[in-house]
Image (cartoon, rainbow, N blue to C red; front, side):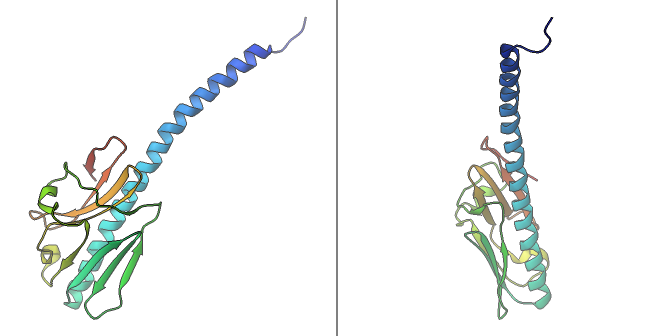
Length: 164
């Protein structure tokens, strides 16, 4: 009596493994891209708040812009500070209909803000936001009129924005 597997049995197992791998890859890719969007949104929010704090400490106005893959912060009379976005994210004019008070900021270009010297981030008079996207995944930082802080937001493949 011979022992072993027939060619049909081996092919069936290989096909099943291939199907399961394809399903797993799709879910894993979505998870990885979502995490990259979260990292980008949090990094933009953190950099913006850090620069605003430094400008407040120096008692000078600051302008922060998103240009391609680089956030450029210019404190009056100082050397510009830059932060490079990673993971293939770059400036986008994507707007967020679901974000709180986003409609108040809709007239902005989505590329930055200007702050005057005041306590906290209250020096940012107008609603402001920056959005960076890589494909259908986006990360954003938003300062609305009614909040004295920046909020990180992401957009996933399904097109819905959510606060972090």
